[in-house]
Amino acid sequence: MLESCLAVFRGAGDLPTEAKVLSALADLWNQRGDREQAAGLEQKALAVCNRLADLADRSISHGNLANYLERPGVVEEDAHGVEGRRGGAAGAGR
Image 1: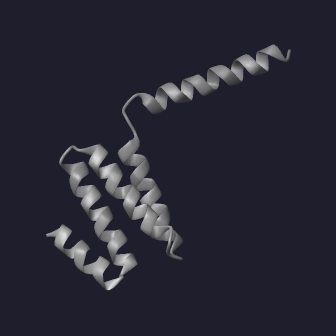
Image 2 (image 1 turned 30 degrees about the horizontal axis):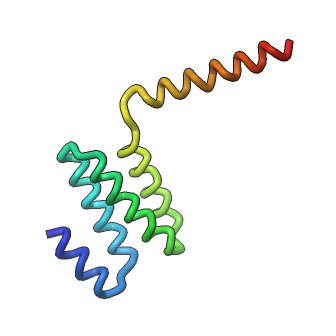
């Protein structure tokens, strides 16, 4: 159903609604457990949002994409790595 709507909005050149439908499809795939497909669709939604003046929708799309790309444990590991480098750099200067 959403794919049919997407085709209609694309055909009509309705970019704001096209972006919303792409985001809705991304959410659907995320709920189905396919975060990779969700991220791909949200990237397409963001590409459309980047062509529009509405910063709120663009911001929401960025947030959605970050959620789909986040993998459990990676954020924590990255944060510890940054802290370790900071500590090392600060300690070297003493």
